[in-house]
Image 1 (cartoon, helix red, strand yellow):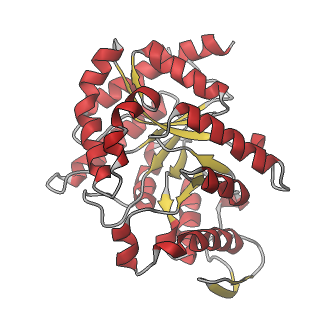
Image 2 (cartoon, one colour; image 1 turned 90 degrees about the vertical axis):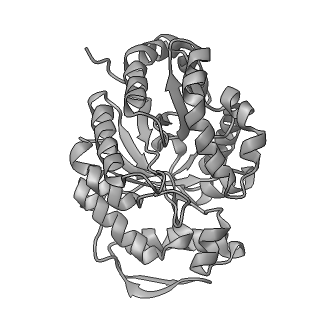
Length: 339
């Protein structure tokens, strides 16, 4: 018997769709379909894709991947976490997002980020110093192109005159902007331009809770819609076993490999902080440990959890087992601790 997920708290799946170049990508896409269907059947409410260009591993583009998953996803949200909007022209993003929203009948969430890889910026001929203004301009243009009126824009990097996206979101659906940011300053900026801040998997719980409070304070003191009208999302790595020790022993090879790949992108702190992240960021452990850490984040204000349970090299049954145990063993303890 399935247990209903609390109405005030949502759970989604963050796909880790990056694979060794020697692998058969079509087989991995089939696995992503299977895990999407499992998450759907277990009551998860969202499916989200990552984004990179020219990555070290095979990394399918998220808009196309999410479109492939539409018939397997029920009524789940379909989102990006996060799309590097500084690398694609906002006209293209607006048209593609609206198309995805039409295909899914209004289920799209746009998670956007500024980007950090020098290889990507160099390949697109974009300077890192232009990231912030490009990012802000792009979001303004995307929203403007979805309006009922012809849209004109004159910015430092983009200019449009009397234009409108040829495809509009489904039935005037407001596609939410979730902004990825990893410093207090950029989180405050996110409050000024986005509907939500999305905390990344590696940030510590205490830091995430404190910065969510700052985001909400900044947002609620402005003229924008208040934060209680939107989701407050956070990404977490999650793996469940009978004990904390067993969970870490099983999942360590896959998470180790994942973060070694990240460290190749000038992110050396993933090496030095890895053990600390295991203790203060990741949801790796027994059902009781995982529930306690989720309850702590709920108490801190988060209400939409995106769990990554499947990393490159991991056998599919291990990921499926974590999803099933979360639904059958963790959710009841979240209920108990929230009452």
